[in-house]
Image 1: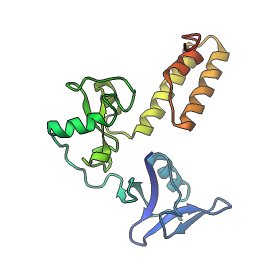
Image 2 (image 1 turned 135 degrees about the horizontal axis):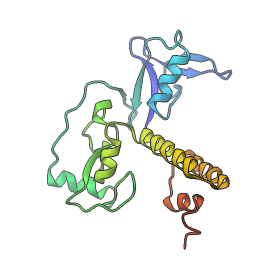
Image 3 (image 1 turned 90 degrees about the vertical axis):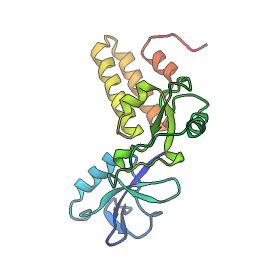
Image 4 (image 1 turned 120 degrees about the horizontal axis):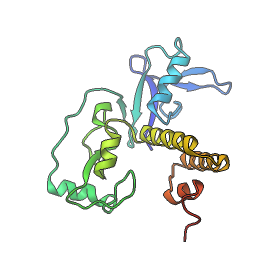
Length: 199
């Protein structure tokens, strides 16, 4: 999962929180507070304008490297047939966002961390995606896409739901699945009353 920190390059310090939830400065990445989305990091910075002044949002890469969000934008690359095969095999031909099978001839190379937000063309940042998911995600983070889809879904369920109990159950199921970082289409359909049970 992608994580973010607030880091001040000039002083080589990170933002963290004390036991009493006060903002403090620390020198190591291990002590830094990790945020799930860049928006959470920005909101934390806004809540402590003096303590977090001049701190910027950085992406923590899998190898521990820090990449400044919205730093220099890497140019989109045209991938060779061999590179496309390697990317396609990562998920055995399934879209990494929705799980649907995508034919090799039509899959799109998706940048998990968008190029516009400091992502690279490195193999660890590339995944196969279907056209629909790749278009929806565009240049946002996967977590932000999930939040937006959930928001839209919950709004539609509440707006159309004449059975209040189903709306409450659907919200609980979605919230639980988001916390576990798992979305299961069948559980959503059961919660919304679209199907009775999974065989």
